[in-house]
Amino acid sequence: MNQEEMVALWEQHTAYEFVIKDADLAVSTMVEDASVMHLPTMSGGFGKEYLRGYYRDVFIPGIPRNTVMETTARSVGSDFLVEEIIMRMPHDQEIPFLLPGLAPTGRPVEVALVVMVRFRDGLMESERIYWDQAAVLTQVGLLAAGDLPVADSAEVARFLRDGATP
Image (cartoon, rainbow, N blue to C red; front, top):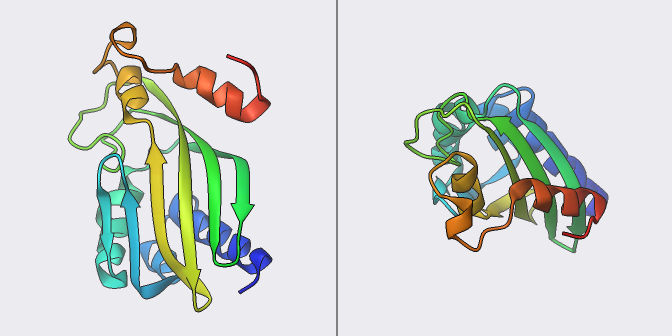
């Protein structure tokens, strides 16, 4: 699988999740023993059949309607892709993969995240997604920004998008 094919498969996979919102199509891009893990909340799972249910029942319904994803950087290797993304959404519903068990606060959330995707046999083998959970908790009012050494998420997003110096 060359780099262009990996990028195309990744973009197809994310369209199945965020635009088409179809769990069967999303897992069609994965190997049988695939894994997905949102590390800060340990949301995800292992195996294509488990992931089908996870996408159908947890992840896809947990994506707020007005979610916007903006890729700020992408690196592609021989069998992997790493992407920096700014994700913006209203916290107007429960978001189990990001804020499990938290009722909607109505606040906007903007989070810079990094996803590491590995490929095998022409399909996706794994996704590992990382973000600063303290910054997310600050935005929804569960942590006071002044009490912790946490960067302002809007400032982080500006830095990733524009290279603006904090």
